[in-house]
Length: 615
Image (cartoon, rainbow, N blue to C red; front, side, top):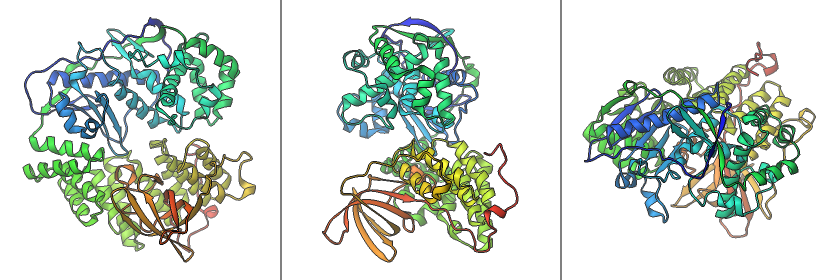
């Protein structure tokens, strides 16, 4: 976060603008140096959207020097021209009461999307509050791309701080408050959450809408105060605190070391939020992208349908994904993207043979389709085979994926597991660290490194990884971290143990290997085996989680498929009714590392050791 001067800014925002267009036009693609926009509006409007994202990216680059700004997950911005088109893209939003979105951001594991509705962001429309959601979530994605962890209030506060960024000629204003007259009233008329409690929060308040609103607005106001408030040295003290948390310092200690006693900071903060006007930071505007660097082309009907089918799949609108990909293939059977999407549709339906066929066609048509190649490989027998020939072929496929996209973290995860199975934890360690660096926000990637450290006879380091995750993430990541912690001998654990989850009343825990899963619309029946005992539970499909290192990830996870053979931990309330052993409360699928071959050399005897750069 860089230094900036101050100007007085009242609760009014100048809107992000885009000119109107007339007449219906085909979808087109606009490419800027770092973004891709698809629109059925005017070319000028599409270019303006691309410029707006380039400028915000430039602001972030100036404020956070040295940060990665481009993810391995491709980012597509859809700019529909009107409500009618937006409703076709996001039909579920129109099934709900209340205001309809002007902008939405979707952060998938493999792809990212933003939807920016053109008719709500014209110069004559002063309502930018909804569009700011896109900037807010985009800032989240940039932070998560670079940081292992942030306190929830700081994560949300920073995203909101930059969400209303204004560009005015040679000057850019950051830290502007929301335009809505209701947005900050909650801070001026309700007692603020005590700072010590706010810092303890591992997730936004969800007890009721008012508490959630207070949490978000106070998070914004606290970042504003610590950046622009009196004595805050233009954000230098916040940067000091920020860096301390990244180095593992417990956040309450880092906060008091940086800002002083909680009670004194609380007093100054409460006075600050009663202001009727707020200061905004003024920084030089980032360079404007030259118009000649924006490349435009008209898409065919089939290409448009294929792109939209990928959007529908990436946002888990599977019925629409199927319809659009089938329509695209009817118009052009040689579209690799449409075959890839159709493969993922079949994957979601548990039709693995059909999925593999479509994914293979995608790769044959375009060998750059690394997502299709990865999914096809993981659906094949190769990951589970022990024959030398198959192991070599599996390794080769993973390397081909990384040749196309060397920042695709799931391939490094699978390679790390591959080398653990080969009895080479040293090699696995470097690959686990690579995945962790590429996707630092995934708790499971840190735990993978910790598990490999155990196999390198570095139990204390493994326990440190476990404690780091357990103290910062919530369940099921917290529970998985505690499993790693408990694998470390007591004598080799750090003195400070991570905090256990609060015990749930009348809830027991069972774990075992998944033997069968049956699903209906909302629930699933899962049968597991533990030490010869067969247990059956009925549970809501949405009430569980899974290890981040499972290959299908959030984009393709459904507990109904691809979970047989995994270890699962189930929390349940014991009951007498049969055939169920109890009413399940939650579940967590685990991704246990494979066992090394029986003749593998002990980890401590392997040649080589992690370099200082790897540690």
